[in-house]
Length: 309
Image (cartoon, rainbow, N blue to C red; front, side, top):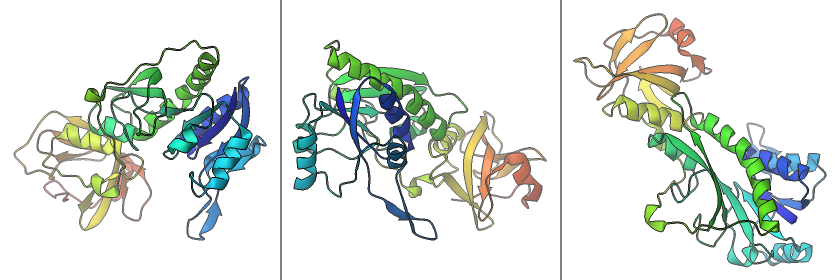
């Protein structure tokens, strides 16, 4: 099939690589505009654009997907299908251009976790499994017919970053299979059950403020769901502390939530509303991210001190 690929971040790159290697014809790549980033405010290309250039692919970076010039470009190219991975919402007039419309790789088991941050919310909510869904795009976000799904477990040590990488890698060959099946008319779409739909709205840093009155499991899920970005945070001695990975003890003390109840050279335990929270990967304000054993070498706290919201 003749394909236009649409994507922007790292998550989309394995899929683009897989399509380049497939027997399908990749006509070009649509990605986000270059943005100024960092202290030097240098223009940075998207990961997808960099990969596209490495493979000598034509790149389109429209400011608007509804612009007449961009729509005409797509009509003139006349692709059979749009393949979308971690990109913007496509307008109806764009979806209608290809013969096979547009398909999307979404990092959840739809209809659960429709929205911008499905991986984060699955972990924050304590799900034991997640996966990818490849579906036919409709104008209403993440509601199209399901073409393929694959599941993975969310392990005790998994964070949003590790699940992101796993789903990105396994989604790539799955996309090629779906393209093959669509071309050979060997696929049966499944209509989503809207009654089972849940939302996964965009993540903002404010979500990361730890309320130590919550139970340890919920706090650990928050930490893992927001790692590596934007990270769950608390304050100790007026300094922001970021937490990236943790484990818990299913025991309690008589101390109030947020109190340090375990402290030695290799671990620190913080009382929560239920259970004790044991950080494993941590970052103090102005410092680099450290394993807890290294963080504790310079830690000035003692048992009885408190972390606060």
